[in-house]
Amino acid sequence: AFFARRTNTKLLSVALGFSAGVMIYVSFVEIFPKAKHSLVGELGEAAGYWATALAKFKKLYRMGLFTALAIAIHNFPEGFATFFSALRDTKLGIAIAIAIAIHNIPEGVAVSIPIFYATDDRKKAFVYSFLSGLAEPAGALIGYAIFFSFFNDLVFGIVFAAVAGIMVFISLDELLPTAREYGQHHLAAYGLVAGMVVMALSLLLLA
Image (cartoon, rainbow, N blue to C red; front, side, top):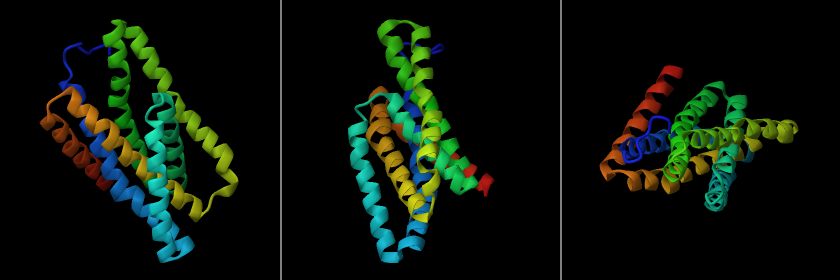
């Protein structure tokens, strides 16, 4: 918001598309396979597939309700997801942290720009964006406190499936529509592809 022009939204469109590409790629390539592997190992192949799908769609429905809430609440499960993933698999945790960190850049812009447009106050826009981001470390701490004694393959599988569903839903329901709204359709598509390429390269470097 400190550097934004009130009439220039093309960069925001590309950034939102980029963020969606990162989150979709890491969800399908890294998180969802981990969920399937954990659940199949714990429940058996048939039950594992069904539990993965049910957890995903249940969380998708819940996220449909959560999208009406503030960005702070939206950020809370992201901190929770990063903590769980890093606890289970360091490489996966780093990948998700990268995805969420990149996602948080345009998300912060998405929070601050409307406030800046409405109030013409850069400081207020920054403060609201900063406060909304504090929900992520809170999510990690609370998740640790609640689930520390319950960690097993079944819990990890359900959480990974839920995280994948949440990230894909956020990308398709929030990021891409907003990217198209604030810029040309092709800009959002270019950002989406760029995000997937960057995430693929980062995962190769971590391999």
